[in-house]
Image 1 (cartoon, helix red, strand yellow):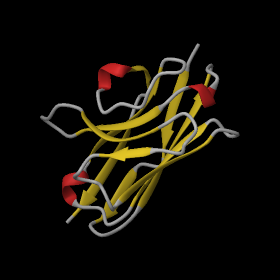
Image 2: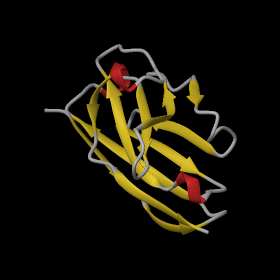
Image 3: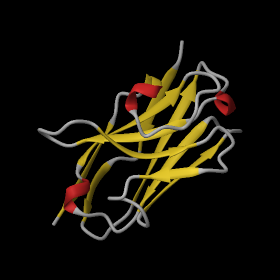
Length: 125
């Protein structure tokens, strides 16, 4: 049974930083591309960042490029999202997602087979 458990969310002032973690179990972690998505109140879930199986390639939404960094530690079965220079518009529930085995990184949530429960990030102005 695949489980993705996010942690690290919280309340932070604008300009601050947070680091989200997503611990995976039940899959051969190094064989799955991983992604982060977010959903703000009243809005649809949107792509934030994705990383390939090896970790050598990453892709970002334009809204977070230069501020957020996705990374992974395959030895620890964990993917991270370092968020710097946070803005109030970054407030959302952040979700970790994994593709099927040998799936490709994608900006589309439809390419992801497994999802975490989400962690709340709130940025105050």
